[in-house]
Every structure is written in structure tokens, then in C-alpha cells.
Image (cartoon, rainbow, N blue to C red; front, side, top):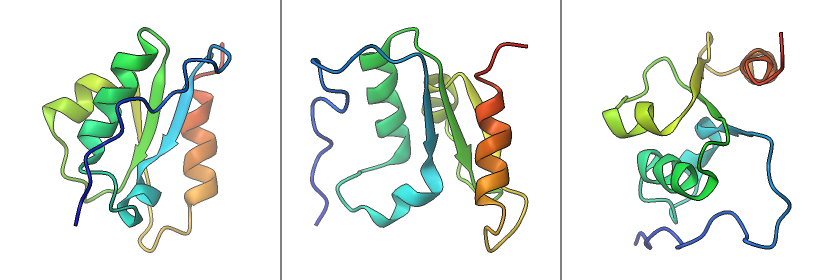
Length: 98
């Protein structure tokens, strides 16, 4: 049974974030999440203009909600995902100044 997404993902008392880097591949295991699109949309609403960058599988079901909710997307190049670290590093570099 899936439960609805919590109303707040980011704690109000937490220090402001410079950015959010998320591996959505790992989220498939958590039944509390209705969909990755809803999660990303909730993060976007709570973080405002804070950059949100995430990784996806090559076979991801991309939706307009997912795309509009993030600043940038990175993709894994292998299946099984033996490139988790490299993809996270490359995607995270998007957040760094040139």
C-alpha cells in the first residue's frame, strides 16, 4: 500500500541549501513515494529557485512534471548501474561554478 508523500520533505528549520543532488534510481525501493515526479515537484516547490539536479536510468519514463521540476538531468550509461559513482560525480559537477 502506498502512502501519500509527506507535506514537507525539506525541514523548515534546516539551513538553506545551495543545491540538491538526488539519485532517483535508489528511490524505486521506497513505497512511501508515489512517484518520482511528485517527489521532484514537491522538492521544487519547497526549495524555490535552489538548483535541483537528479539522475535517471536510460529507460526512465520521463514526464513533463519530472523535467519541469529539475534544473538538470544526468543519466546512467550502464545496466546494471555499475556507474553510480561516476554518474553522480558528473551530474554533481553541473552544480559547480565553471
